[in-house]
Length: 299
Image (cartoon, rainbow, N blue to C red; front, side):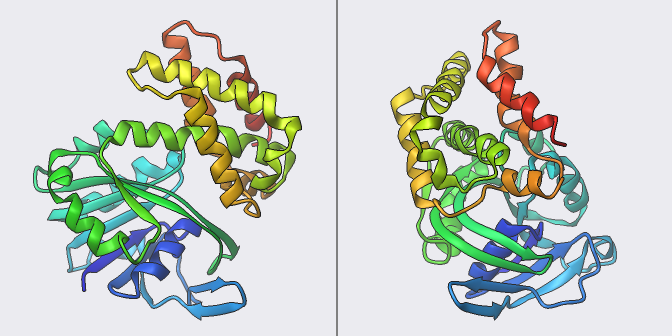
């Protein structure tokens, strides 16, 4: 039984907390004062999440160094989250980050000591926040674990078996972190902006009227990926995106939820990432550019 801290009480963070608490001591780190129990529901069953809660601004006098830290935040919150938790990590800590879109993982890795292992978690587990304290499971998509530095590569087997193999099933190890992150990005590009603009669940994107837009979006992304030595065949990209649409057919994407509630979205780290890279290589990506601007106009 390990001590696990989860920074980020969103849908993914609470879903992970519920799963991991079955075998580990879980503490949820929240930015806000939490006055209610965390709850997790699946189908018709609702249960209390067996986790302690620690307010972020109470970390400073906190005596216990954090050994296993899941950081489950929006892409634009990642740097602040790393900054907040870094002084409280044990020298041998495992840091597991999960977010949509792309951020500079190498820059994060440089902030760590040689004894700290950094991992990236890509998940298609469906979860929806019903309230600030209550998450509802909406689908059991695949979860992938990848290593971001050498120490993580050495330890990935034990981390996978401790936290993922049975508790976050179906889950898999992935041996190419950059490819893993691009594969996650591809799915995000295909699903998030269109589901957000049309306010529809993921499965509705399988309708033929969206097919040409998705095809162009992913083709643009695959062309850009090749320029940074990521080989993503368009057929594979389409297969992955449509498989996630099918498996999460009733889910509303996080971006759809953000647009619905007037929150900032992660579009800059999704279509925006492709647009930024494309400019460096003088490649036209008009469909990604169009969706980037369309979502930003909703902020």
